[in-house]
Figure 1: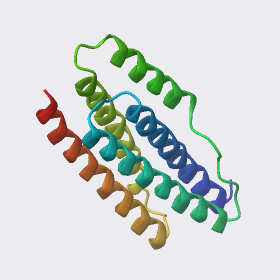
Figure 2 (figure 1 turned 45 degrees about the vertical axis):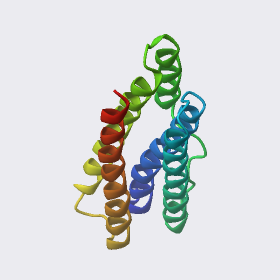
Figure 3 (figure 1 turned 30 degrees about the horizontal axis):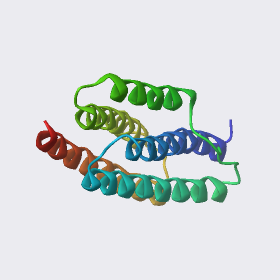
Figure 4 (figure 1 turned 90 degrees about the horizontal axis):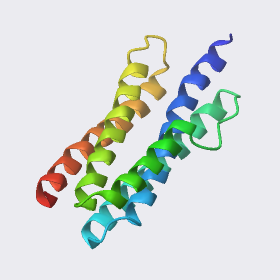
Length: 149
């Protein structure tokens, strides 16, 4: 496998996770009452959309084709969030818990890719920026979760 294809495949995995996260946050907006949470989820969805654009740009720079949708696993997670919120006594808390779980999975994927030794510096910088923003979102979501409980 060519170097550019190898990097693109790894970036495409993150791209799928960002599509999934964006859709998950948009789904969460429809399942909460709090305007503050709606705005928070909207900002996170917008951030993940921006991450996806940046990853697509990097993939294209390597002459490869970016994926254009999320994963089956992400769809299942969103369906689980919707089902859980339907039967939960505290929808907002349950949705925040699932959002945190999803973000932690994304963080793990970013951390794994950042362990690679052969990534170009521009990709390292991009991944670090995304990873730090995701960590910040996790921290913020945990604070929100404490306020909702």
